[in-house]
Amino acid sequence: MSISIADGVIDGVTIQKTITEELIPYDETPADANHKAHIVNPPMNLHIWRPGMEGQDIVDLARLTGTEIMALCGFKFVPKRNPDKYDACDVCMKIAGHILSQE
Ligand SMILES: [Zn+2]
Image (cartoon, rainbow, N blue to C red; front, side, top):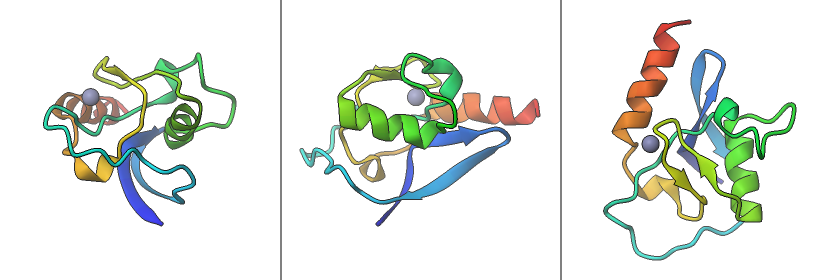
């Protein structure tokens, strides 16, 4: 088990820290200084989203299938790395805060 602030989750009004089982091994290549842990939400990833999926589900599916997804900040990536190693993306955090403040 790991606690994942992950390529995090925006679920309605809350940014959840989700606890997920690591079913798919992460790429354990050395940490990349340029890589950040981004936040993913369903509305920006409708190409992979299915009804009922939350942000974390999208990240897991993308990691499983090698599908590129888009973070709140517009960064496109295929999730492979363990986000626990990285700092949260400032832009994603700012946008998430903005979304939450509008609720
Ligand atoms: Zn970001």
